[in-house]
Length: 251
Image (spheres, helix red, strand yellow):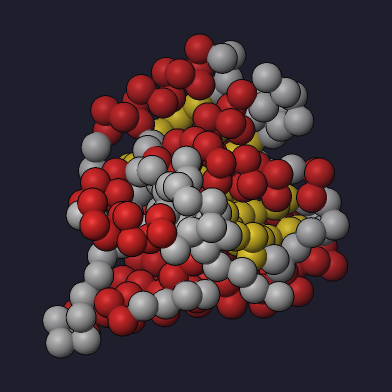
């Protein structure tokens, strides 16, 4: 275990499972006190908190729907009150589904945009002012390769995730004079619960399009996120890093 996050407070939305849990776990192992949010299942969140406390860290879990401003504000308030000022934000809280253009109506569009794009805005806006006042802090927002390589059944999802990248790039320029950094990570196909709703044929089709020829792990995404959150990336802001096994390449 390292100590690069010793004495720091990290907030990880969607931190009770999948990529979010891997990020929270790595931050805790690196010395950070960690707050995680969860959706509807408290059990995995409580197990994660117990794991982090066993490492000697302070840790809390808070139920939060990022589509609710009130719940986001409560998440941030409790993190500050119980752990201290937030030094690092990893925003993973999101939803994912697909729809053909015939199936996609405004309600499904609105739900996706409100959670995945407006949710990112709510969380960033809830933590940014304190970071800017302290002239210190780093954020990473989880996007998706769908933002860069969208497909016909991802109209709503890809649009929301592309918006997250654009927002982060604008914020990076705005926040940089105050020493606050913000970046994105865009994962490809990762071994999470989401994978289990896909058919084997669908998974194999994506793997066949991936030069590395396999599915990624949450830990591999977490490594990239924690690098960007850390002082090792102190001169990096406004970037979107890909963790997709070479499936998407951009200049």
